[in-house]
Structures are given as structure tokens and as C-alpha cells.
Length: 304
Image 1 (cartoon, rainbow, N blue to C red):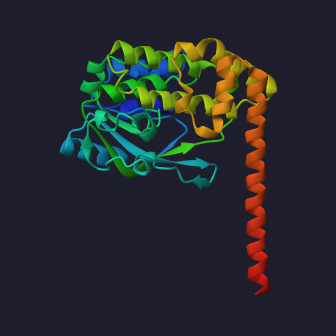
Image 2 (cartoon, rainbow, N blue to C red):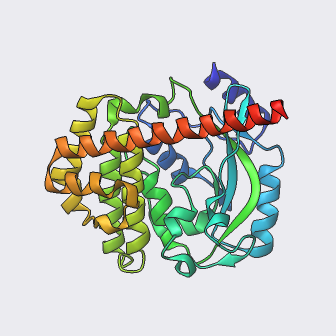
Image 3 (cartoon, one colour):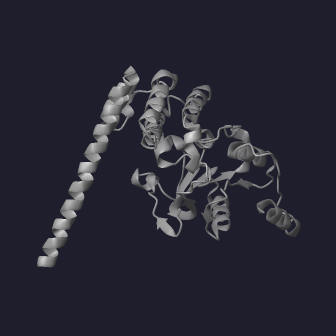
């Protein structure tokens, strides 16, 4: 009854406008919302997440005071009643916090400082319309293109420590929980970002951060591969289409995964699978050693 509840609120508050359309995915819905939005600022919020009560009020005050085109804020992850702390990548990478900067100030790590979703950002509507960036019509990863291209288009942005959103994980009914049905959507997003950076004249400036982003996205998808057959399908797609299409350079991959990526580059999918299994085994041994060390310290303390 979500629609019914929303329309009741529309009658109570003239600021609220509800749009109804056939289900066409989150990207299409967001584009429709942007096309009619009348406010000075834009936000994109997902239905299954949580939001701080003073989120909008605080963000408006910050935006009015410092006037950035984009504000990036923090979020936490949660599953059921369990709250999981989220890393603040920007702070770890040494990005100035609470200060208005240009994206070019952090051009080598821009895509690593910010995660590619729109719901942890506060946009000036005028800027978004001027940038002429839309969400891709994809089942999954439809927000990556919009988030990345608006970020490089911004003349000013600000990262802040405030945590405003609780991001729900582990929901099997969500798009996040049904990625197997559209496993290769992320390759379309990567290709679109690559092409758009070139078309808009930003590729050389953001080459390094784009390369790092590509390899991180590929690794994350390989980690959710499910089984050996799914791994082969994904690795084949990257080898045959994505590698050349996105001009990937494996020197930007995380060192421990470079053998996997080099095998994929050469089309040696079985070799890539073998190298991937070795990494998994090494991780298992490392975890076992950590547990063993923890138990020894625990027993030592008890005996003392």
C-alpha cells in the first residue's frame, strides 16, 4: 500500500508530488523525478534505507553557507537490527573534510574517496541540470554512471563527517540481493563512464582513478560470482569485451590480484580461476592463523 500512503501525504502537504509510472527500474524512475523536480536541491533516497531526522535541514544549512555543487556525506550499513560501521574512505585517503574543494584537487583518488551511489550526496539542482547527466537504464549498477560523471562535472564539492543514511544489506528481495540476473550490467556502466570521460574531455585528468575503479568493481563482482561457471562467464566477458573497450592497464589492480587479471587479459580463464582459488586459500590460512593466535593469547591470559 505504499502508493496509497504516499498519495494521502500528497493531499496533506502541497510540497509533496507523487509520480506514478510503470515499473522500469530505479534509473528510469530517478530520471523522471529529476525532470519535474522544482527545488533548489536534489536528493535520491532508496525505500529500504534509514535516514537521520535532521538530514535535510542540516544539509540545506551547509549548502546555503558554503555553496558547493555536491556534498558527500557518510553512511553506515545495517542488517536487521545489527548495525555495521562503514569506512570513511575520503578521510583515510587524506581528502580535506568539511572544506569546499575542486574534484581536480583529488583527481588521482576521486572515485576511491567517494562510493558510486547517489543517496549519500546532496546536489544543487541547477548544477545537475546543467551537467545533463542521466541515470542508465540498467537493472543493476544504474547509478554508477550518474554518480561518477556528475562528480567530475562539479566545479566544487565538499566531503563531510556527518552520518545521515543507514544502508540496508542482506535483503534478498532488493536489487542488491538479485544481482545474478544482471551480472554484466556493471561492464556496461564501466564502458559508459570511460566513453563519457573521453567525450567530455576529462579522461586524462581522471585516468588513474578510473583505472582503479574498474579493477575494484571487477574484483567485487568476481567475489560474488557464486560458482565456477559464473566465474568463467564473467571472466570471459571481461577478457573478450571489457578489457580493450575500457583500455584497462593491470598495473592499477591491487597487487595480490594482478596474476588473476593478467590471466584474464590473455584469455586464460582456467588460469585465472586457479589464481583466484590460491588467493582464497591464502585468505583461509590467514584467518585460521589469526584465530589460532587469538586462542593462544586467550588461554595464556586464563592460565595467568
